[in-house]
Length: 224
Image 1 (cartoon, one colour):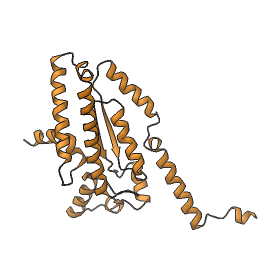
Image 2 (cartoon, one colour):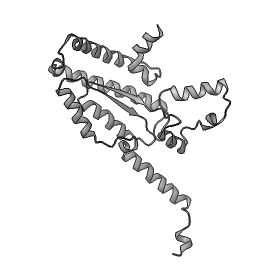
Image 3 (cartoon, one colour):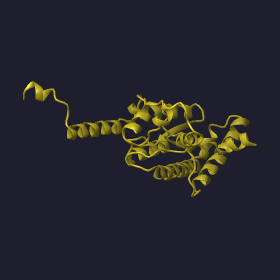
Image 4 (cartoon, one colour):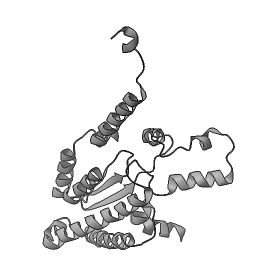
């Protein structure tokens, strides 16, 4: 092979293969992709230690990354269930224009609002469209539609709440050990009430934004 052949740019098939390989790399290293270099085992140990010394624990889980497949989402949900956390929140990813992950959505043709942001004059209709995109839950990915992700999110909440409720039922000492004061007792009641409330909202057949599952009560109070 001469130098001209060695230095020539990749053809379309090679570029597609390289992009596919990069996509698989990001899928297989999702935690690195989102800037979480520590292992899940480390996270689990921290949660269990916090539980041991009587702290209340809660985890935040994000679903719907551009290259995320069903097995990765299932692994996230399973980790939340078996990590020992008292409660888990599941949010759908909404890529903001200034974020790194937005560039991946843009590259894959999943989301592109640059044309709205590049112009100095944005009409009220365009502003409403941007607001809807950035505030509505989730975004289409390579493997799931926004509607499918919302169903997965509801299922994640239901699965976690049922699992944790059974954990408390068969091992009530798990909760009792953390109650050291009147405030702790009322926090347990609040936790149980919030879990029941979130579970009820997941049964709503209409699409709900991510934050509405966990922060609906707070939003209601602010509006009053």
